[in-house]
Figure 1 (cartoon, one colour):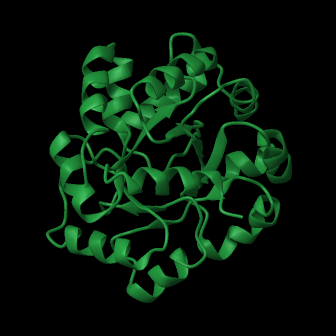
Figure 2 (figure 1 turned 180 degrees about the horizontal axis):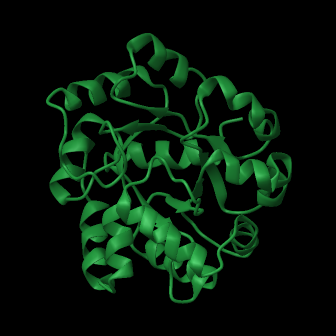
Length: 260
């Protein structure tokens, strides 16, 4: 069974427009978790391909300062994995939702219970940055037969043979990490990044989407040429927190129209 997330991204790829996935932190809203539907609805109206929804964790090792602070604000707003999942059960979204959080959060929730609770929701993907490929057996059995894809991450230091292992049988999309470091690092990219992304995109049988540090329309245009699209997180999280909704909406409107 080809999962919904893969189908949606492949359909977008076929239009020759880049995939655009915004990241938001659940609960980082004046209404707390109750504001999640509003933000998701706004992003759908802007034409995004899918939406990455962060669940806050106290030790977010892959996140830079902007998203880390968003997580702290979210926790102070009373956000928990359980009330995020509860909210997601009642949220409608044409764009598939992708939960991004850390393994301990999901393990404490209960992996089998999580997949069961998400059945029938708009959640079609999981990103767990601190779960190594060799330990995916913790959650993979519960995802079999579900419509939720476990997204692999491929870093700049991942060699070709390891890349082949990570993308073999992968579902949803391949998350190409554009920097050696945490999210929101800006455009301090390696000279051979484009070559790396193009080779990974040629290797993978599903879409490759570039994230970490993507923060401008020029970045979007650049990475759409060598991969299938982008994920933008820190720029969006910061703008929403600072009340610059109109500015970030305009950026997203322009970004979703960028062609490959």
